Image (cartoon, rainbow, N blue to C red; front, side, top):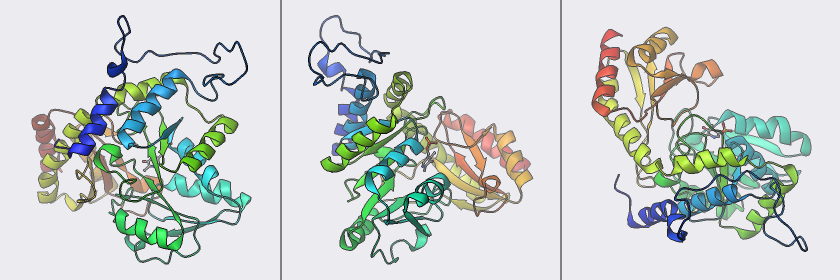
Length: 361
Ligand SMILES: *Cc1c(COP(=O)(O)O)cnc(C)c1O
């Protein structure tokens, strides 16, 4: 994967965050520290006091993420844990928030079901119309690009400019492309939320999320929200994310290459009526590892997944190629629409399997 020099140096800083500081006899990988309390002989002004505030493994994982984001980061036990803290720190009663009608459903439901009784007002708009929407009067605009599952691309620099003019904070969910492939803060976003459950951790074995922002006052408030709500991950889970981060670039490189290799087969197949592979350039460094493909029916879509050896599951960004038929979740997509997530399998073998599955269709 050819990364521009500034992003490559962030990646290198992330990878070398520990090895650059080692002294003789130190373990090479990050140790997992399980402790709920820390030695506190004098007044409670030590940085580490009690593990609801922080823990060495949480700090180390946050340092890795901060290197990648080039911004302060706080870790949460899931992407939705990150969303809930980010919103609590940002919004108050009477605020109006604009979200994508075709974005991640749980983020919308968090506002409509949980925050609405506290006076936060949710309004929605499709990703395709967000750049022309009237943003006046919103406290925050919350988007993801490419959107999920429709994979619409939003010009973040243009949206950030419009948000600034309207006085709204721009919050970007960067789960789909990750901070390695797209840098919303550099494009003018105020706050970034990532579900690290997906490609960042990458092994389908842990839930995790983070929030990044270069607004120091906001990050201080976010930390206060985390401290008081106890919305902090367990060290072992954070350590699993840290371990996954060490290979994130390698995994993404193969995942994106596999998606690129499968694309022409899906496009040429009579079994597939529509293929969506968003092109978020120039704001992103790759088109990513997700492809939307519409088969004739739910049964045809399921048959493809079985024959191609793709895991039938929700979620995405893991080592194993997988597919999710989004209509079963109530997304407004055709019954045969699959969101395909390409994994790290050897490209030639994966392509053979996809070709055979499409020929059988
Ligand atoms: C999965 C996902 C989330 C929620 O993350 P969890 O880790 O499942 O809580 C948020 N946004 C997007 C785009 C996601 O795909």
